Image 1 (cartoon, rainbow, N blue to C red):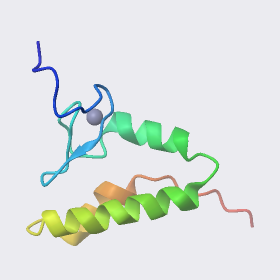
Image 2 (tube, protein in one colour; image 1 turned 90 degrees about the vertical axis):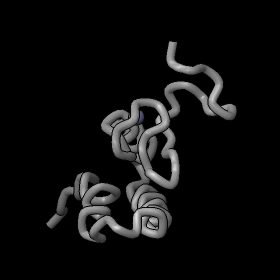
Image 3 (cartoon, rainbow, N blue to C red; image 1 turned 60 degrees about the vertical axis):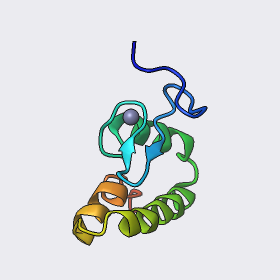
Length: 88
Ligand SMILES: [Zn+2]
């Protein structure tokens, strides 16, 4: 038993809980491993949109997590995204 209904949050959604930016489902730093996998799957044909989305999350998180170094936040929110393969 892990509590149950948390303000209508879907179980397994792996949504961030602010202001700590911990995963609401598994408690890891958000985006957790599960969420990263889902995001890559969801945005696999549109990496640009994923970058925009993660950038907005990073901007919001940097407001909430003022004591965290910007570089480490950037790594956490954006650094894990695989770069598109070079075509040249
Ligand atoms: Zn999670």
